[in-house]
Image 1 (cartoon, rainbow, N blue to C red):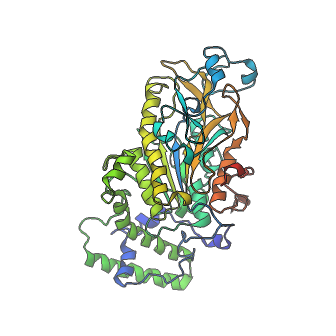
Image 2: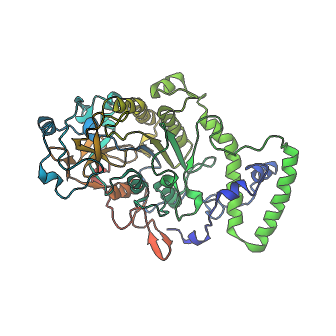
Image 3: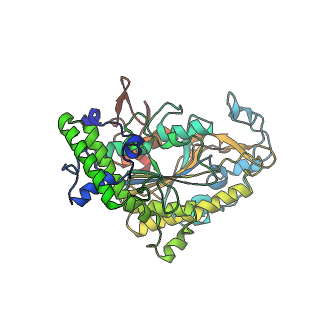
Length: 482
């Protein structure tokens, strides 16, 4: 996309950790001592600032993205997609016409249909159907757009998560969506990374760090996972025992060597490395300040259900709002354990109740808080998982459902989305998407479009081929657009 892409060199962790034994902020400290930047360069110069904000292909409707990723596959049939016919046929074997030539992760083709045990309400003026496990989300029904016709190609967790995030189900080094976005249009945050990842739940999502990696893009653009607590990023502070005088002596020496080498070679990697150190130094103060909720009112903290100092999805939702306030371009929240097969601890009863209680209040509060602060119009909020769950039950130790790729639900809000509507429908059993089908690549194309990016033009040449997030597919979903 950018003519200077050949000049962008990979920034690896070695630049952060091995090049400077007395702390990540050392080189940047020199510039602060001199009250001037180490390299005088325009604010939009990507050679020295890889995250410099860039114009998209056309005016953007959204400036930031918060992607609430429910890892495991939420059951759309128990949360959003009520089917009277499925209720009527509860306990019957699914008709052969539905499952002919179909593959499933765990169930057999003759599995019995399973109606929901939940009660649904038509909410708001839009009349959106939302189940009783999400009472807080019901209150913002007119501020969201439900998409009931999502489809994907992959029915195993790890590859399916990769597919949503990178456009490919293969572990082959493709860039994640957040990396593509920050590569394309940079970030407006000067003191924090452009792409931040927050996690909650008992473990990380299947697929791990490739879900937020930069792939073949420069590693500058990979997502930065933040931990809970006062030290969100490891190794950011200077080691104990290093006083300012000793640090200055070291910095002066390394800075002189770097400037000398830069003058001799004009190697942009050296300039970019210095910019990375400057970011690291600024983060020494900005990251801990971000993680502290001391500046938030008690009412705000209560509205999210957050508990300062206690890691949770609620805390992460509040942190996501604070991140976009500070200009971070792409924030991704992973919440795990939505995989409800029916084995002990993952049934559609107690376990689904718990997952919904953990996210319902916070995600509704996030929408309301962004709206109150005037941030929702410029912040795109996306909620959903890698796929949905089958209309058939999966009888194990307890009641559950299998993985389902043919028709499931996600929702979006803010950032140019036409809210208060439901897009798409599934058939009478909730099996196939039959109206306004939205493929994962279509969702990706639409997210990029709202950010002012043409998904066909956001490319990077690698091994002789121009790659893009949407691979060779994807169409903007016009019905989503305000």
